[in-house]
Image (cartoon, rainbow, N blue to C red; front, side, top):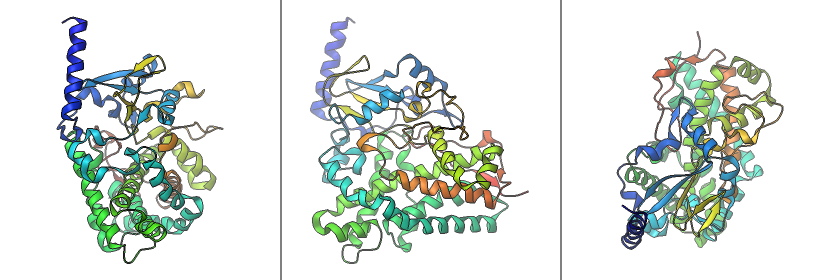
Length: 423
């Protein structure tokens, strides 16, 4: 086929998809070549991602319905895309059919643009200031100590993922949102299916819908009797100024950004520290060492592997590549955080002993940066030292090669992590 004929075919495909509607929620699979940014070897991104970054930090990954899908894997390049409010949109609603049409929104802050994004984020921001979050510090410590007590009673062998890493941020998020005890088990059951793209868009968007429906119902229940958590605070402050749907979406976004992500970082970080006696022993002895450990762990693991997709609104140049309106741009956060051009250091290994912190985009960048970043840091700074002070000899209770890593999940992690608490 000639180049002109191929171009005409692509144009007709794009026009047809625009007319009929592109519905990502109906996709039942994702081609393997698209999944390269989500694949890893243990905790490390696959070597192919590093080779792609070295060859072209902005690279066309694939095509879909006439659209180009671009992968951005360089640090400076990712920052440029994530900070650009003019060239890109985060509004995914036109691409998810009936799911996106339901009440006009599907996923809270991550899938919205200004001015809607600005309006909703302003409601959340006061609840995530250091002053407001400081009230949770004693509760976070209490939750962690309680889970350690339960592990000790259950030991000597436990599942660190279920018994500690998954439970701690879940209970913290429930406290933050103000969910009553009797509803937490149902909420817990929603789990992490929303982040698994191996079944295509249908399964992931279905899981999003279930958790959002649950939180909408929780919001309605607090209209007459607001609780003392985030949901209740917003209801008291703005009342009917926010709908149950919008408030449920904000609560769902807090859950999305603060539960599975922190759980995976706790578990994978604990595994790394089990194999790094110098860092582990210093962490046990020195409270101040928790800060560099946490920052380096966030960079090194980058469990949120890609940022929310950006949809090009206009034709423009991006570091020498021509981006066309309608193209999809995906930023690899795990690739960006190992870009050796950003620091005179070996970024392929975990090293909290540096005299300077290495900047990272583990929480994203720009106006869509994770609003709960400081809450995650608070949990990690408490969880790591308390875990290893209670169980300084904790080890994996299986061959590392037997761990079931999630190979096609936007949030990377393990299904289970059997550990032995003491000798």
